[in-house]
Amino acid sequence: MPTTASIDLSNITHFVVNEGHGVKGLSEMGLQELPKQYIQPIEERITTAEEKNKHSKENSSTNNVRYGTSFAPKAEKALEWKDDPEPFYVSDEEAAALWPSVLRDEALKFLRNSEIVIKKLLGALMEKLNVKEIDQTKESLLMGSKRINVNYYPKCPNPELTVGVGRHSDVSTLTILLQDNIGGLYVKKFDSDMWVHVPPIHGALVINIGDALQIMSNGRYKSIEHRVMANGNNNRISALFVNP
Ligand SMILES: O=C(O)CCC(=O)C(=O)O
Ligand SMILES: [Fe+2]
View 1 (tube, rainbow, N blue to C red):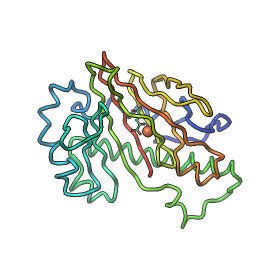
View 2 (tube, rainbow, N blue to C red):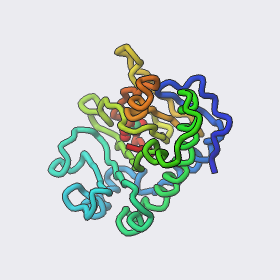
View 3 (cartoon, rainbow, N blue to C red):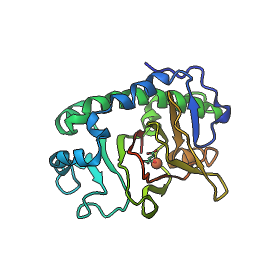
View 4 (spheres, rainbow, N blue to C red):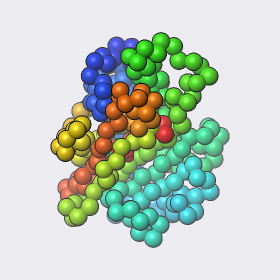
């Protein structure tokens, strides 16, 4: 189980890569255990069309589970070159009933471990704002809701014509991101137009401060714009815990 007891917060102001520090368990647990289905080449993934269709925006039996894809132009107008199931957590019962079975167990494990990390990080970040104790009745507001994204970016024949994910900031308090070893995530340098690559580091998580934390901290912590480039040579996968 991950702990963050020894996290050095001196560098945490916006988007950082933070290696080790006891969250290693989570990152090691992460990507290699995600269902093989999510790391297959696109041609093989076509066999999962039925499952995708079941969870598409139009057909999903709940708003809490959606399969976003850029490969069904009718269902999805976005031009991004990715597939991303986005289960939103309400309860174990609902997850058992409605989440795609192919990722349910791993996604729930990732969600639980991420929650522990986020709780500790938020506690420490709040302490830096002189909030010594978080009122238990308000903690859930700070923690937000719970969503997992599993982003799959297939190799793209014309990467110069599209993007993996367009520039945006996350609505979350904190996002926990596990990326594989391909790379392609860029963050916009604060107060500048420069984009900086976030290198994949084995055993490291990327922790992103989102809009909610920027608002709650009166701008002391900055939510930062980021984007993912499309890749002409490799498939890429990332998994995110977001608390919008
Ligand atoms: O895939 C990534 O590295 C980042 C994806 C992202 O920013 C998002 O899904 O909000
Ligand atoms: Fe993002």
